[in-house]
Image (cartoon, helix red, strand yellow):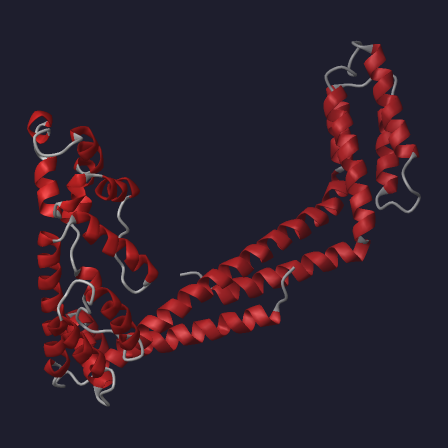
Length: 370
């Protein structure tokens, strides 16, 4: 695995060296020199095929004139100005060959090496920015890693012999009761009433029903078939068009709205209203129970609501978190995780992750963004 802190420090050092090499000459001076260097290379490339030998005399004179003008226009203090002038002098011959163009390029190599400092600096800036981004990404990964290892360590400290049935029994009793109540409601209530209830749960963020599709909701609201329960509508959806015409006023509308939504209707159950096992943390359970009660009370009898109150009361137990941690540990810790906890591997990994995270934070603090 890459060492993000080391890579960032290395990139910072490379950037500083590159910056110093540029400042030794001067950034502005180097940029002017690079512009002239590139312009002269471009002239060599464009005219090499036309200004050589005894070919295009016009191109030959144009080329020599352009090179002379470039050399004459150079600032007196331009780095490597003498090299440009030397190349100009060399190219002012009565006849030029391809070898002369290659010689001119070789004579320009010192200029290329000098202006290469700018390229080196620009690459170093990009590498440094990349290294900072990589360090930030690694820091996010380590935050998640540390949180997971701390969770494992916490679960490893849980009392696996704690009497979790004190929580399991009321939670299980409520979950079973609400499932049965919802099954009855789904079987007997008009589909428009059931789907209206599901639609209203969008006001309760902790009740995670999938909202009814708009076309299905519109159909059960606007057609007489919406007074039938969901199982009946699903049965209708399997009828042929001719048979369906005996049961509904618009067979095609039912096919469009219901037949295409079979999966949604078949999967509609009480799971979004169950607490589940292991139960949520104590500070979350009261909010969950509060939203569940607003929904459950609209279709279930008082015994189901009473069981939900029993679940809500669990959060007030002094031993709730201890019992819950035991339940979570039993439910979530794998055999491998038990072994890693027992061997000390989790503690070692946690220490290493924290040290790496600290090193990256120090490196980011020590080296400013561009």
